[in-house]
Image 1 (cartoon, one colour):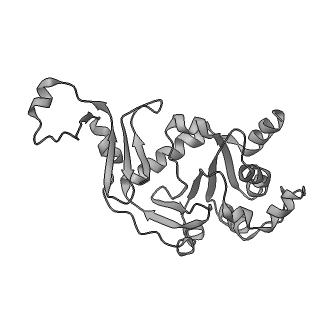
Image 2 (cartoon, helix red, strand yellow; image 1 turned 30 degrees about the vertical axis):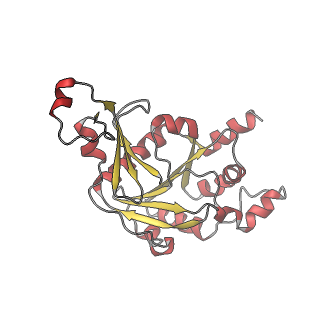
Length: 246
C-alpha cells in the first residue's frame, strides 16, 4: 500500500509528519517515541504491536484530513476549470515522464533532432493566452532528476512555448524538493481552494484526478506551492544552467 505525504511542521524534512495510507482510510503518524515512564503507565489497553509518538497539536490541526476525497474521475470532467477559474491555476509536476508527451507529434520531431521550442500554440497554449489576457495567472514547478530523464529533457526543450503565452514554468531538483518536504504527487491547485490530484498507472498514463476542497488538503497544497515557487528556478535560467554543465 502506498503512503501519501500530507504534511509536516518540522524543518529540514525531519519528523513529525503525517501520511495517508492510501486505500485504507488510515493515517500514519511519524514522531518521537514516547519514553516517559509515567505517561506510558497511564496508557490503556496497549497491545504488544503498538507504539506511541509525540507530535505537536499544530500538525494535526493543519494536516489531518477532515473529509473523504472524491472518487477518481476522468480529467475531462474537470477540464472546464482552466477557463472557469477566477485568478490562479498552479501545478506541481513530479513524474519522470508522461505518456501524453510521448504520444504527441512534437516528441517524434524532437527525437529526430528538430527544434520544438517555438511551435505554434496548441489548444492548451491558446487558452492560457486568453486567460492571462484577462488577468489570470498560470504557473507550475517541475521536479527534475540528475541527470534529467528523457521526458524531462523534452519538456525543458518545449518550455519556451508555454512561457511565451504566459504559463510561467520553474524547475527544482528532486533532491531539494525532498528536503523541503514537498509532496511526491502531481496536482493542480485552482484558486487556492480546489485541489486536483492526478492518479497515474505504471505506464505514466493519467488514470484520472481526485478532487478535494478539504481545507486541510488545500492548505497543505498552498504551502507546498509557496515553498516550491520560492526555491525553483525560471525555465530559461534553468535550461542555461543545464547547458553549461553538458
